[in-house]
Length: 114
Image 1 (tube, rainbow, N blue to C red):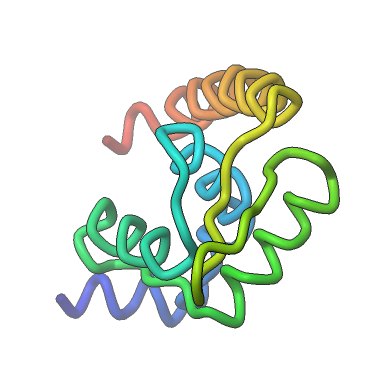
Image 2 (cartoon, rainbow, N blue to C red):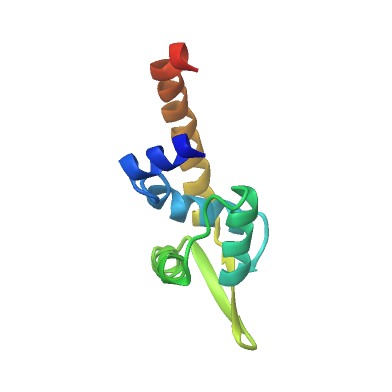
């Protein structure tokens, strides 16, 4: 646990996560319509409680994705449900393809350390 705390102290608690929030949201919404609170829980579950974005980061990211036409939202009672658009699907495919290339380069960079 001490090693993990040293890592967080050196790089910040959110250092590697903030850049991936919108991509993560787009990927999760591509699996089916969802609302903000459920998306927070999904991220927390998938990261084994290592990352639980706050409402203050989730909702602005969702609003930006919607402004860009990558998702749509529909109010259902007190909740807003988000759905990916065809443009969002296209952007997600491109982003995942790019991410795979980046991850391969990172793997090459750290291969001898892993």
